[in-house]
Image 1: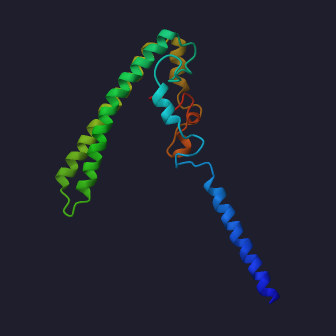
Image 2: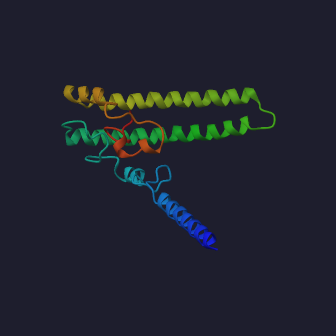
Image 3: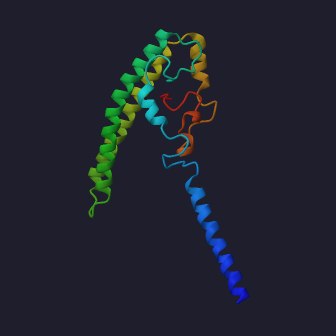
Length: 177
């Protein structure tokens, strides 16, 4: 009888520890679930990524108000154009998945969609380069030197949820490079 009571106490303690640990883990940092400490930075970006003092690449030293305004306008134009291309690419990726998972895959159609996706990726890369060069053209020689050498110094943004917050890169995640 005494061992049964002792075993029940241990079982109850084990259940209590499991319950507490489950609750503790569910209250964790939440990386990847959207409820962690970095939750909301994307929403913040949508409201204030453009214009003077907005934070968009504003770590460039000694930017004038005029430079900030021009960079903000350039970013707005770039984002509008890039969004359309990204939407087209996403539609093609969905089409590609449909073609690849069909009972009888049409390799010719699959290759054509892959080529279209590659063409859109090339257009996006060219637009990104033009945007970068446009910003570069607004900078002084000292700012250009900073702009060209500061990229990637403070931890490269990698893949995964831990690298997506504002602290992930030196200039924040809203810079195009």
